[in-house]
Amino acid sequence: MDLIAELEWRGLLYDASEGVRDALAAGPVTGYIGFDPTAASLHVGSLLPILLLARLQRAGHLPIALVGGGTGLIGDPSGKTQERMLLTLEQVDVNLAGIRAQLERFLDFHAPRNPARIVNNADWLRPLELIPFLRDVGKHFTVNYMVAKESVKRRLEGDEGISFTEFSYMLLMAYDYVVLFDRFTCTLQMGGSDQWGNITAGMDLIRKLRGGKAHGIVSPLVTTSAGTKFGKSEAGTIWLDAKLTSPFRFYQFWLNVDDRDVVRYLKFFTFKTRDEIDELARAAVDRPDRREAQRALARTVTAMVHGDDHVARAERAAGVLFSDDLASASVDDVLMVLEDAPSSDIVMPPDGLTVVDLLTATKLAASKSEAVRLVKGNGVYVNNVRANDERARLTTAQAIGGQVFVLRKGRRDQHVVRITR
Image (tube, rainbow, N blue to C red; front, side, top):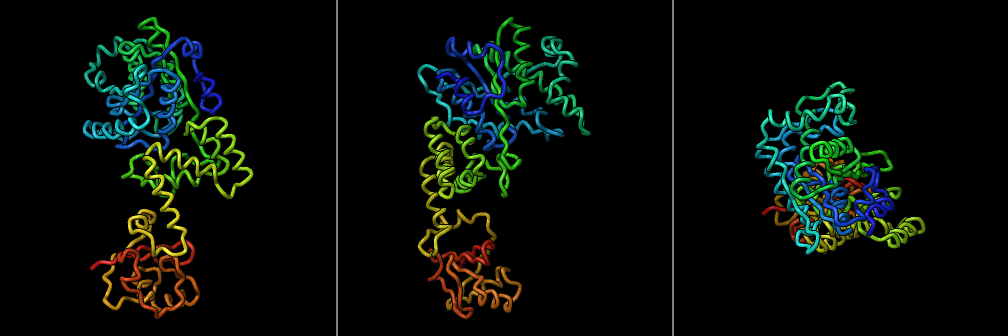
């Protein structure tokens, strides 16, 4: 596979160094991407660089995932308007363990010809001594050169400025490239377009220190057609860790992608072929109400991150959410679908409670008189079934699995009632 042609078709090639296509065509190349351990999990914004490494491997090259156990203690100023909070050594090490496990889902570390590697720049950055580093590395960079880089220039133009700590980040990244060049004959670094200055700094340092030729490839930063930051939802960041973002909510994030973005995201975040994506693009135009392209995107990405079982469960749970009656649903599915909804624990008397009692107990109605008006106005649902009698009593036998009621006021206000003994 011609990696450059593949990236061009997918819209993933923002810039590349001169001669990189010939270098890739000449034989297996070792390339890397760095991942900052700023949290215990990567998020959907990290998927693009992860898949860049996977595409590199599928094209027959050798990928290295560099986790920043050293640079993570400094913080990358790229794309930031103010300095990051510095992490402790212990925080970085905990975060690294979570990130390693996630990367292993995408890269083949046992491939016979081109196995992937994970390396930690803490191995060489934490033992560094300042004076030798300044003599051996710092002398090759003028302040003029560093200030001209976009990531630094933007910070200097802002009100916050840039600390010497973050200003040194470029030198550490460049040094990473030299170490990987020495240890693994690594001659390619990839990343987002905001990393171009750091990547070219590393290429320059390899040329000055080793007389070697190194390359860089960067992809565009992902945005939405609506102009919002990719990877955010109303509930916040969409993480790859199932404990931080449930597989159901992860699936729903992709299912709800805007029609204007879905084909682009199929190219970015899946390995589907040109023919497959063209067919889905036609379906998006001809049958937009079916959301076939979004469904394919959600299924594919969720399967890659969480596995096929979680895709099936997410789709079953989505069916639960929109079913006419939740009575036959499982308690686990209901709680998963409504994990972000307000909830209450209520002791249910043997003879049950009226829907009016539940509406007031859960604060969906401010008073019993308001609750009665809501029921008479056909605005209340219990387990997705309209409540039409304010005097009817609800008992444990009518609860989902004998444990849960889902109350809904109007179209959106939902409340989960968990029955306690």
